[in-house]
Amino acid sequence: MDIGGIEKLWVVDKSTLPADLVLAVANGAVTITPGATNASAYVIDPVQNSFAVTNPTNAAPESNSLFYEQTITGILHENDAATTALVENINKGRTLWLVKSRNGVYRMFGTDVNGMQANGGDGFTSGQANGDPQGVNVSLISQSTYVAPVLEDFATFEDAFDIVEPVS
Image (cartoon, rainbow, N blue to C red; front, top):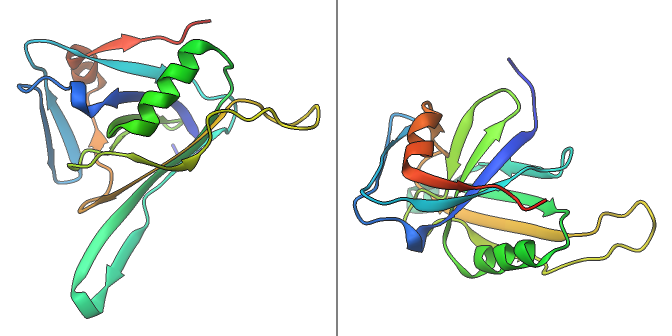
């Protein structure tokens, strides 16, 4: 199925990953081997078309280099203390993101050493007019030696992480 858009995202602080958890990337896919304990993965349910990901190729023939610039941008529409704390953690740390597209494909961003890092956004924006969005703009980037890999078995993610649902 060829449907664009993001259905759901999960964000993980890479500094909390158990030492024995294994993320193995090969042949365009990522496999997860859970550790003895689980890290937390925070769920983001984006409001209609409010998140996007890109993975453009960057090549420099003069230096014989090639990398992929993974980007995630979006807006969190919640206006509560839990969202504020989550955004502060996203912006100060190296994060790992699992992104589920509307076509059912899961891709993992930030699997390289540095993870996804803040490169803009804001702590909160109010908007001006009635139709303006209010919330938190998130802008993240990572340079990787490979395209964001596909996670083919979501159950392994659920086994390795404690899923933290948003507070309603």
